[in-house]
Image (cartoon, rainbow, N blue to C red; front, top):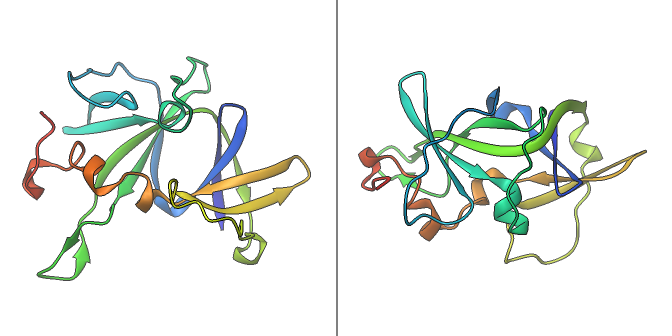
Length: 163
């Protein structure tokens, strides 16, 4: 499996590449009032308004630093909302801002190690990869936002707005 690597507060994290649509440079984001601190803003991506979450702010309460390697990772985000008529999850594009998004890594599924620590407060932290530089935490994007947090990011067509 190909993994996209990035950093949050000098710790390495990974996303499975099949979740990634595109990695883009930082763009000007329009901020919106009365949103959580980790909500960096929105931007126009090929005619679609895309919300962006600052992963550093979400996890550590600090904004991502403005490095040349700080990027927005565009993912298909399903969350935990299901379309009950077809039993398929509806997805939409979500941007994840992270630092040092410059590397990929090939790892087999068997190389992913269970953490064996209950982390119900942060269910988005998945298995670990151990390499010669240390540990890499895998993110489970489907658990990145709680149901109550998802209300900020669902398109209007799913019953909510970004207002």
